[in-house]
Image 1 (tube, rainbow, N blue to C red):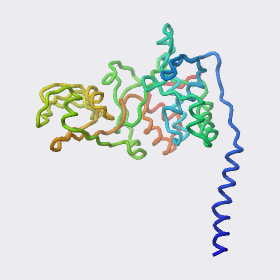
Image 2: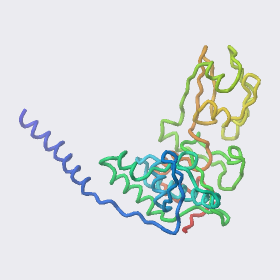
Image 3: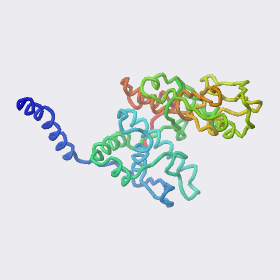
Image 4: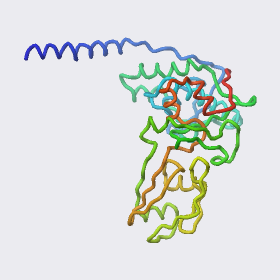
Length: 305
């Protein structure tokens, strides 16, 4: 018995202490910065506007928009997409008080103070991973026909991305539908269900209560996302249902079970641009960040400021 305890000590305890000692000795790497470019970020909870260097901002967006567990090549693709997105808003909002807000309205941004509290002992390991993604794509952005690309992105596709004009009413060549078969393999969020009472369903849609839901005239895009749907003789767009019912995607079905309603969705998010879980799936298959970006944003080139 004594031998077993000693053996267990050497096999489990000693490696733990060695690993713990190693993690404490990891040095934080330096972030490459370009002090010529500042982003004016409206901090909603703090109710103030911070001026943040571009790549420091991208670092905070990586932390806010993509899980730290993601492959490095997916994080690098996100870094370039997020940098492109904010550069576009610097131009859009140059005459306003701020360029972006720090929420999902634009891009979620988490500052260093928040990350140190959230990550604790894993802070240096995690921040080094993100800094590597930012440094290895330093000042890179996407361009199309001489213009900065509006590099939209979202969580999870339903197997395809969507044309921008079907969601946001503007059409560009680099935000066209492409296949994204990798999402299903890497996330449990690919297919989800949401249940609510029939009463709540009608209240959210501002419809009078009826015992039976009548659904007709469903118009779906080529990617199977709902463009228009008629519920109890009232027409809605897919986006209206998505927003009012707070569901994950416009690729959905609605079923009634007695006095409950079950909505099943495929994918997560608006569907335009880069699928983040698709990027993860591509990275796991061995694609690099440039291949990921050129797949989701076709007709673009990677440029450097």
